[in-house]
Length: 300
Image (cartoon, rainbow, N blue to C red; front, side, top):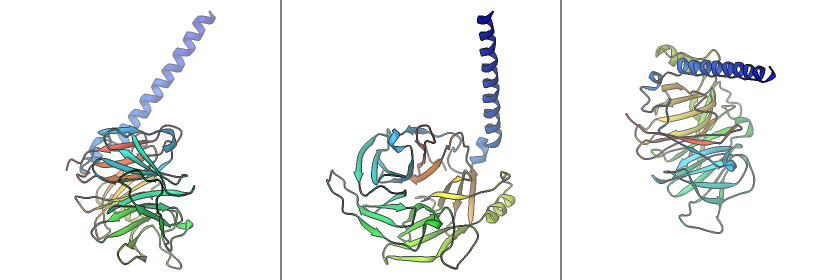
């Protein structure tokens, strides 16, 4: 009797688990249908490829494309640049550039690596094509502070500027404004513009959603964790883990696309970049599991 009781108990647990799994799957299919992404140019509901990353990159926080064969990444705690093979996701090199710290993003620009800390400072050095024992690192200081919690670093090749996306306070000094701001740093003039280049507010998101018949969650949040410039459309992509969404801006700062991201696919999206053909790469922190990089082919 005890044996049969165990079988019955196990069967009930299995049935409940299956029912819960099916319910969750049904919920996600309803909330994030493929047709939601049809105009994005990407199948955001179904990555073309996915790379699982080693345990030391469980907190991968930034991603950039060096060329069509390699990506570079940083993680939250260590001053190490990781060089990743774009075909198989293997870590090919580790380049130590600094001490432990809160490193949030990385950007490759004209043979140089720029690495962002959460306090707004940026480390930069020449990208070594071959093995080197020591890297000469310089630093850019900005007016951004820890309260801004700047997490995204991008590059605008048209204006030759670095773009800073703030996850928290979107203002500097007394210039208080509602929304999340993107600031610009001119690499030629070595000048930081204290006036935000773009401001994305919840009000602006709701207005765009209303005008385009887009269903929003009950609580709308948007705290960008990454930013990237699309090489073919010249649009600016802002990725958010808090708010699980992807917003696309035009050059004037208007929202032209808005997508909710399925949390079963995008566990904790923290990094975004593009290769020259428009292929999209998004990195996710592990959150107790393996971190990964999702690959989406461009089909527009």
